[in-house]
Amino acid sequence: MAADLVLLSARLLDPGTGRFLPHTALAAERGRISFLGDDRDARALAGSRTTVVDLRGAVVSAGFTDGHLHPVSGAERTMGVDLSTCRDLDAVRAALAAAVRELRPGAWVRGWGLDPNVFGTAPVGSAALGPVLDGVPALVDLFDAHSALASDRALELAGIDGPRTFGQGSEIVCDDAGRPTGLLLEDAACELVEAVAPRPTDAEIRSRAAEVLAAMAASGLTGGHAMDANGDSLAVYAALEAEGALPLRLRIAPWCRPEADDDAVAGLVRAQGTGGTLWRVAGVKLFMDGTIDNGTAWLETPDCHGESGHAHWPDPLRYTQVIAALHRAGVPTATHAIGDAAVRHVLDAVEMAQADSGGADGPGVVRHRVEHIETVPDDTVRRFAPLGVAASMQPTHCCEFTRADHTDNWSRRLGEERAGRAFRCRDLWEAGARVVLGSDWPIAPYPPLQVMAGARHRRPADLSLPPHGPGQALTPLQALQGMTVNAAWAAGEEDHAGRLAVGHRADLTVLADDPLRVPDTGLAELPVLLTAVSGRITHRGPQL
Image 1 (cartoon, rainbow, N blue to C red):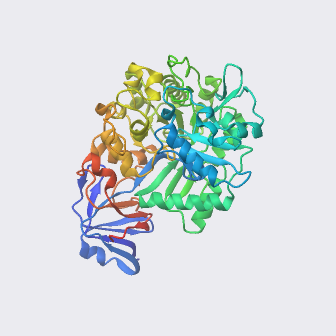
Image 2: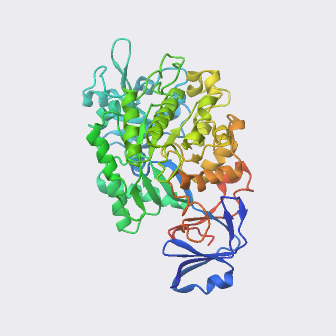
Image 3: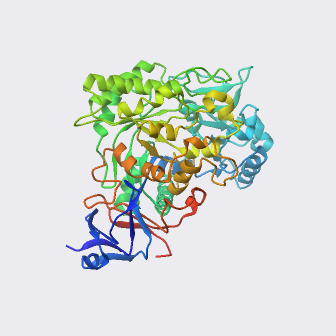
């Protein structure tokens, strides 16, 4: 049978070793790499329907996988005003004012990507937006997607006029007189306003998701670990795949909320393995805490405002029980844990679950993950490897939202000691943990070369600030492995993904040059020439 794809005149980079293979050609058949050899023999495998591409010396790597992103829910969230590039309140006000001028009567303003650092040392609240939103219903997501600012009119439409009690770590922030400031912390609070805000149609969400996924493929992504199944995400994936328009391989982890009872947990277990050819449910996402910027993380000692002292789960023991149940069922988990106490509790829960089932190794091993890990002490760093827990890191969070001089909101809240142990990618790696890299899009940009560059230089994408914690920078090879071999390992797919080898998936990213030799500060601009998933080209640049 003829090959489906043949790539010629290539430099084949093995992410496992960082060395080029002694071959110049690759062929793929039925979604797998079927041949590695010279151009002449590869040409002989081509038939009338084979796609043959002369790469003229370009570099082929195993495809890049984003270890943490939100494709469909992020597509919907980013349909509003983009505030992610606003660096002060004047810029925020100007962007929102422009949106208000275009607003239809009765319509809402939606925004996303608001950085709390624009408020300086003042409290985050809608009053700072001044008259821009006077009488206008508006809901603006802060950059972390764990909080939002609602205008007075939006609060009125939602019937919010004071504090509420929630069954999870959420809050309607109020002033000393009990009046809402507009700041909503965590999902349960944000959902009160989202419930009365208009939503885009299913067709609009599907169209926007298709646009986002195509752009992700053009950036070099061949896959992603999608950390939610919110809304109609699964239906969108199914529809796009049916149309031949799903350009990424997606591994999806639905949420398990603190209020989930045993029946809900059992439902998550039953959902495992469902999906299509390129997308499937594999794992469960949980939240042990919120964010440091909001004061909703779980720290061993509260932050400088006396906040971040509690878990997202009102009863952390219940979280431990859920982890044990999922572990017994063979379901891998990914837990959002940012603060030191949250990470410690997750590792404790995994250790207990493993002890009850015979340890971290052996057949049928269940691979758990911790997402974010923003500040942890040495003893916690050393626990990941023995437990076989993956460290899922988003280095661009550190690059874009914190500062080396600790003048940012995140660092001020933590204080010098804890801010000094920020995003310990290198320490975790050297302690033997499997470090998986991702963007957490739409929290930070998704281009994988930008993510890897951030892991290497620890600076903002525009290089406007000095590196934050340069001792935690990864090497070029480590950064590449974080989005290839380590992502495959975390998914339990290392025997057929993440490497260039016969029998492995033909998920491929083609670059104009060797990413291991391109300078750290130039990596994000390295051209992506071609992307292929399962041997099917999902992006082809004009250079080819």
